Image (cartoon, rainbow, N blue to C red):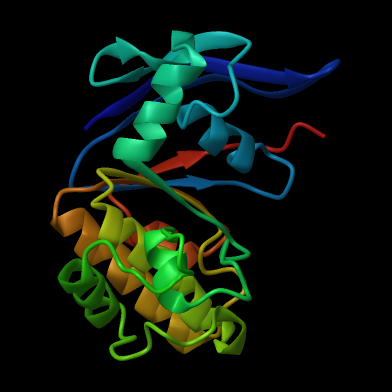
Length: 214
């Protein structure tokens, strides 16, 4: 699945956040959005994901103008094809690791897993084998980020959007997260990352530089 932004621009009131940004995000590659704080990396990430409509230009998904999608089509894209990985992990602290990965519950509680083999495979890939029943609140920051990545793997997301996924992690967990992203790209995912992590950015196939407009 290819994401293409053409001559994108966005403003907050009278402030121009970015303008004239064009980018193509290809399957099997990682694109890094880089620039100083306030340069609009997160806004551009959300624009490419259809969460924010651009003031100028358009976003295309496999040639279809996604920036003109109705809400129902946008929701289908996120439900079926895309995953978002946040800096603050996006886990439900009081729920189990399994629930946070599958985001499924049942009338009898949170214990029924829709696809146990697929869950176990995702846990193994992120180094959390055997921890499906553990409460997310007991995990370290690095482990919570790996749960978020396992969620994308379990879902089989074809496009990953990630906002500063290594920012709150120690060096070892940063390296592990970068490796997991690389493996996902090598498996065919198209990945877009907003990041201050220069080591991560340098390892990406493409870098989009944004300038501060303060």
